[in-house]
Length: 163
Image (cartoon, rainbow, N blue to C red; front, side, top):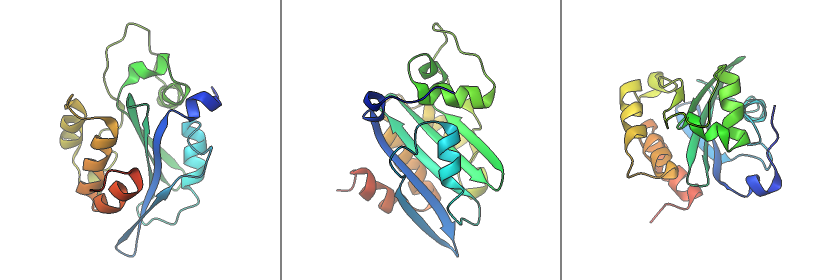
């Protein structure tokens, strides 16, 4: 599995974990180094006690986003742009986890589980439409996702998007 370099780690715009416990959302920054790969993100998420698992919301260099959900032993992944795997080790770890092969000339399309949070209140079609909105940056898409799930204010605060 490719390792993220220090330079690439500096390109991670945000890496947050969110989990629901007793009806309340908890959101915090992922530990430094936890966003190296899907595997390290999943390992970090297993530390959180969420009733429906824990989510990682990651934005990289205003280029792509990654959502990872760990529930028990199951790890689900959504990558906003599979073609990012040709340039970014974190994106490459996502397509490797998904068992996909990406070429340099592939189109910018999402890869993974669009229904990753459907049971939490955001249907796959809505998430797909959000990812298709070319006017939004990855952190703005994640902000909208967080708002739909019920922790938008806290997400925006930690992401530096709060006004």
